[in-house]
Length: 99
Image 1 (tube, rainbow, N blue to C red):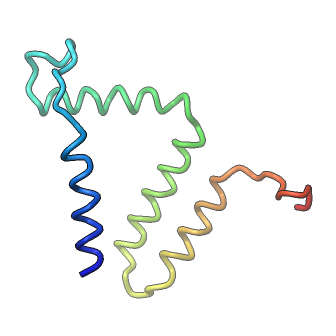
Image 2 (image 1 turned 90 degrees about the vertical axis):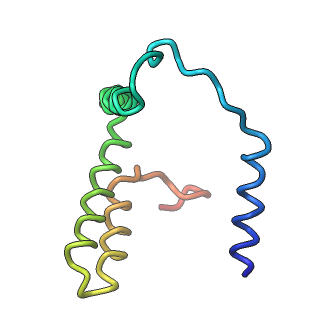
């Protein structure tokens, strides 16, 4: 019940505050499907400039595929997810200078 109330509250805020906007000039006259795939392609091309994000998405996708293909063991996907995220995140010293 409480989860439903939270969903209702957080759904009403965007419904009341967000407004429709006119499509961008390059998307005018194109079908929604064509414009969507065009934007996806542009995003994937820009992703080359963000190697950490690209690495994270590759690891995340591999982990999701592994979790879907190997559902027999329920803990393994979470362990693999944690290990994958640990490999992707840059190492930095902890607060106070202790590693």
